[in-house]
Length: 208
Image (tube, rainbow, N blue to C red):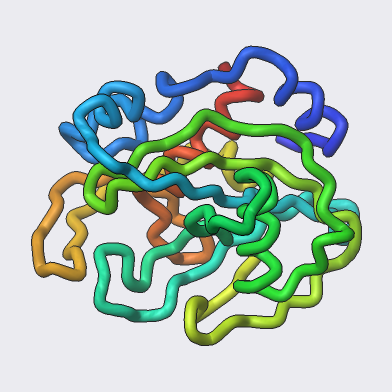
């Protein structure tokens, strides 16, 4: 399936697929974000950027792999993003600021297309607001090696290939094993958790 920036902009003004679109990619027992967040106290807010750009008549998205660190999400595949700081005016600014800091993009080339449904991550006690941006220039990546091990792009049409949705057992950084976890196989990377939930909702805007 080939989609355009204008189609994405239009779909983001309509009713979103919402948490129903998260469930197929959710680890077993995780449940809905809107229910899980009710049980949390003092959760933190954050934002991520699903950044789209055009290259040789093809629409691409950007993902990163986290650098190793002593934490629950070490080495995971994710969108540029992070927690909201006191000096951020809003979560949209958080998403753009984090993308400029992590992968070196220029804030003036970001065009907001819309928002997706928030995702709550109980294990780290974060509520994540996803924003969808059109990056209006060819990106020149500058990797923040403290936070990012790798930056890579992928064709958006790949999301509509059902064969890239797979399941496997995953070993977490605390040595726990999670069985039968759904994930996207993108560029031979395991894209699971919050990032997979967000990508699946984005996909379902065009296939529900």
